[in-house]
Image 1 (cartoon, rainbow, N blue to C red):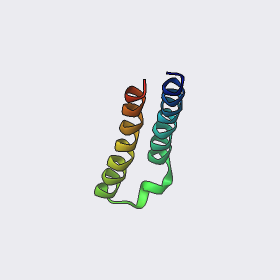
Image 2 (cartoon, helix red, strand yellow; image 1 turned 30 degrees about the vertical axis):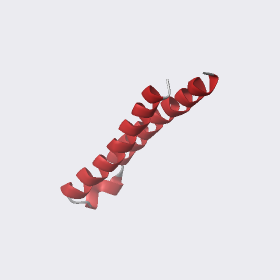
Image 3 (cartoon, one colour; image 1 turned 120 degrees about the horizontal axis):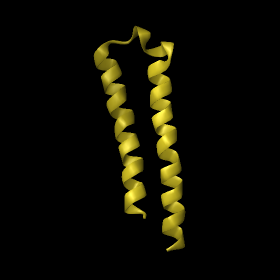
Length: 61
């Protein structure tokens, strides 16, 4: 059971990092030259990664 708790902590700690990366990217000048569909595509990709990390937290709890 100790391994599960350790994995849960690892994935949970990574989820906020992914969220902060998304927010930072949206706040950066990097997106100013992108089309809306490109921004949405990147948000979907990163959003799925965030959801994956949150789900792994639940699975390994």
